Length: 144
Image 1 (cartoon, one colour):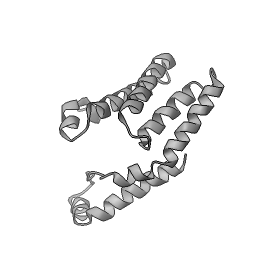
Image 2: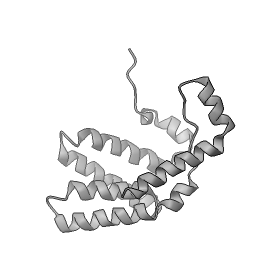
Image 3: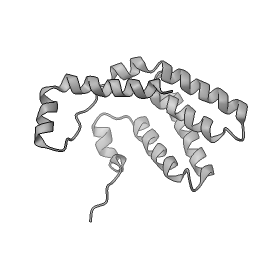
């Protein structure tokens, strides 16, 4: 039986698709931190701090991944370092508030659909599907 794998199990494929090393490393560390969060908070925190370092060094100031990194570290430190955590969470909100331009620059890839009919519809109406995906991302960012 095949078990589903992470899309990042194949880093060479991600790099071939145009991802940078920073993109791949940030995603890998996010996945590992999320898997550890309930079991080993200290190790998850180390990974989230590494994600924040990657985001600050390699991503634009309006990149939602920077906002996610700030939010993860802020939430993880909320009980121990309340003032720092609140400031970090506010920074995350600021990034998300200005992420509209980043989202508008996105070119969402075509998704696999449940049937050839859906696939053909998406190919025929690519701009409509991309606009819908961007709207979904704008709505997600607005929740912050």
